Length: 269
Image (cartoon, rainbow, N blue to C red; front, side):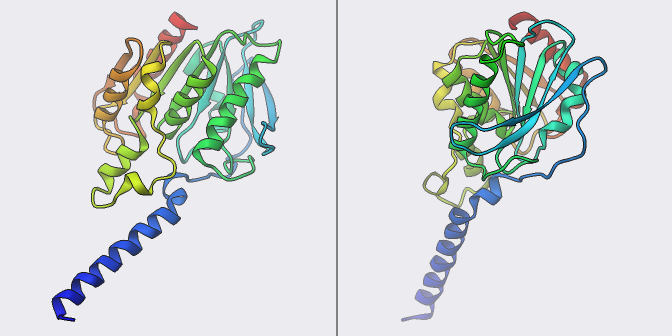
C-alpha cells in the first residue's frame, strides 16, 4: 500500500468517524435543555396556573398557563427555541399577545418536564396540549393560535397540520432543519444522517389557516431565505414581516415585532 493510498484511507476513516459521531450525538446538536429559571410571574391582574400535563405517551410535562381577566379568552400555545425555558415569558404575555391566554409548556427534558426531546415526541405533546385546551371550559377552544420560534416553528407547523388552529405565528422559521443543517455542514451527507428533519415545507402547502412569518434580515443562523421559502410554500397567502438589522436572537426587541403579532391576532383570533 502506497503512502498516497494510506493518506486517502486515513482521510476516509476520519470522515466516516465524524459522520458517525454526528449521527450518534445529533440530539446534543439540536436540543439544548434548560433548567428551571426561577418563579414565573403573570402580568398584573392576570392569573397564573401551574400546568402538570401528561400526554398519551405517559411523560410528565410542566409549564404554566397565564390568563387575562376576561371570560373564556382565546389561547396562544407557544413552542420555544432549542435553548428556551419557556415559563420565563409568562410576565410578557400581555405585551406579546394582548388579552389572550398563553400556554407555556416546556419540551421534554426542559425546565421541570421529564423525558428526552425528539421531533415525534414534541409534535405529539403539542397536539396533546391543544386537545387539553379544547377539553376545558374556561377558555375558547375554537380560537387557538400556535406560535413557534426557531426550532419551535418546526413543532408548530406539524401541530397545525394535525390540530387545525385558527392561525399560526412563526418567528425565524426554516423550510426544514435538514436544509439548514446541510448549509452549515455542506461536507456531510446530512439527509442520510439526520433523525429529526422537522420538514416544515413538506406540510406547508396543505395548511390554509392564516400565518404570520417574522424574520430578521441579519439572521445568520436561520437565514431569512429559509423563512421566505416556507412562507411561499404555505397553502394560503402568508403575511411576511422582515425586520431590518435584526438577527436570530434579538429580533423580538424590534418595536414592530410584538406589534405585528398583536395586530395579526386581532385580525384572526
